[in-house]
Length: 201
Image (cartoon, rainbow, N blue to C red; front, side):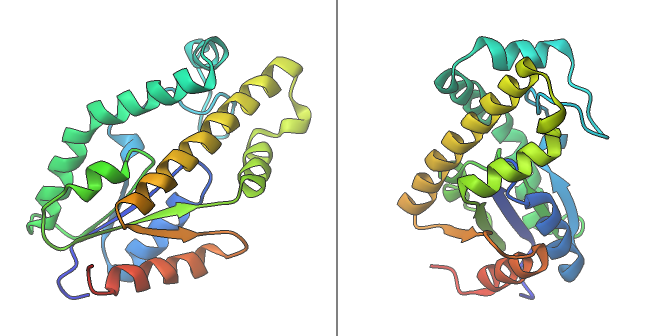
């Protein structure tokens, strides 16, 4: 791994990208960043310790169907891609420490077209049951009112559909996909490290 400079970890919400990325970055001595910090699309439509959704977020999920939500987020990722590409290129060509970059904005078809050296990518997936359990736990689903549950369910439906499209694109381009089901973050991190250390196809 001595020439590795950038590790990209894609995947939809609640697949454990952030936790795994931090573990991989720690092992490699790299910086760790999220594409969410570059520009935020309407985030999760429920309150957490770190996030209080503004009114327009609820309106976004309530007002669009799942296909419209997918188009909206993919359009956002397309607009964000030049910034991601610039960051990856800068780090891959030796400016600053190595980088682990995670986020659902790492759309496989765009990553596949990257021509920078010393960069490897993997995508994390999780079974729909796992996604639902994690998401509902994060949202404290059992404590929510009916309309709030509706928004969580809408976000989940978008998440599942996004993952399906993403996984199909990963497979079509012959990229690396790792199923996180039943594995700890440490175990998934080990699989990521093994994948990025393997010879490129």
